[in-house]
Amino acid sequence: MHAALEAAGYSTPTPIQAETIDAALAGRDVIGTAQTGTGKTAAFVIPIVERLRSAPGTERHRTALILAPTRELAEQTHQWALRLGCGLRAALVVGGVAYGPQINALRNRPSIIVATPGRLVDHLDRGTLALQDLRILVLDEADRMLDMGFKPQLDRIMRALPSAPTPRQTLLFSATLPPDLGTLARMHLHNPVRVDVDRLAQPPRRATQDVYLVDHTNKTPLLLSLVEQSAGTMLVFTRTKHRTDRLARTLRNAGHAVQRLHADRSQSQRREALEGFRGGRYRILVATDIAARGIDVADIQRVINYDLPHTVEDYVHRVGRTARAGADGHATSFAAPEERGQLHAIERHIGRPLPRQPHDAAPATRPAAPPHAKEVPYGQRRHVTALRSRALGHAARHRRARQG
Image (cartoon, rainbow, N blue to C red; front, top):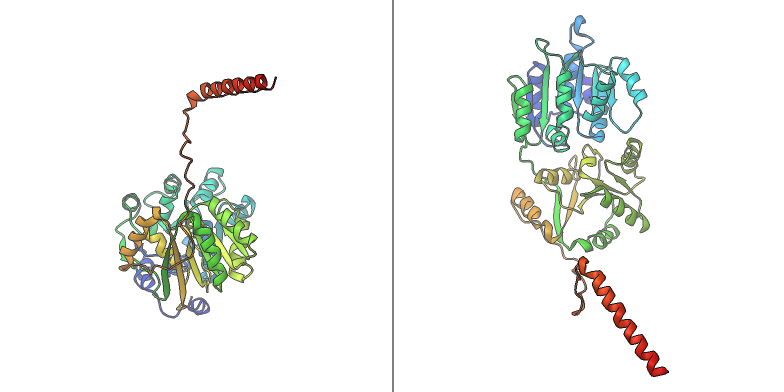
């Protein structure tokens, strides 16, 4: 393990690692409150590997299951399981790809399974996976899983776990602890150790933050202008999949190397987008919040919030994609009039107003209707049409009479 940690560049544990690893190594259940990017993946992968490797001979075929809300986060966690696993087999079970390779990997009895809830339930229902050997369960970004509607799948998975008196360790990590997650924790965790690290996390100190107050119709011209004026890689966050597609198409038509990332794209498309962005093939990545969970790309120069997020936690997560590993970064937000409430919530959280940036985009105005224009109720339209036709007929006959 020491060699694996050195190869991964670990020398000093982060706060979440320092407070979690010892308790997890002792077999205790843990509730860890920490944001993405605080090193929590290693905080549970390290004790999982150590506990599985040190198990007595009769327990050598026991497994650990790590659940993550998105494919990208699951893939990232799987890579860490391989890097720190000291030779333990690890299987990745996510949607958007064929079942065959996953079934083969599960038949090889992996020590660590990293999965998204939906695809894991599919395997349980197909009978291609059983969890009777599971001894360690990790719920990573548990609040996000509930936000995404995975509560039925989590309940199904919990029912498939070995029942008492079979020992099971559960590690739960979350940025927040909403009431439904607290209920889940009380039902399935036994006397857990509580670790609160950066519960009210702040954006990275080295990330410059600012905002443009702009009407929604002028956001795209402003984005194109900033892309032209700025250098380096950009991660653009949007609220919807449709808007992600539209913005990526607009940027591509303007001559920029861009790719998009959202939940409707296949796993191979999402992987290609991330690898292309990480490798420099694409300068700009346009993504939704859900798909962007787990993005781990170094040296993103600028994050642009095309749409403001609904929660402060999502804002912190977005800004945290830049200014990583001690580098400088820049986070810019666009705030339309209907988004001012979200902007004020962000400013209350960070304790200061975001600097307002001037821009040349003029407020969009809708052309005024002519003074005589009036909406006609649907039920009156046929009557109005008949009157208009009758009037036109009278006028035509009058013209013919004058001409005759």
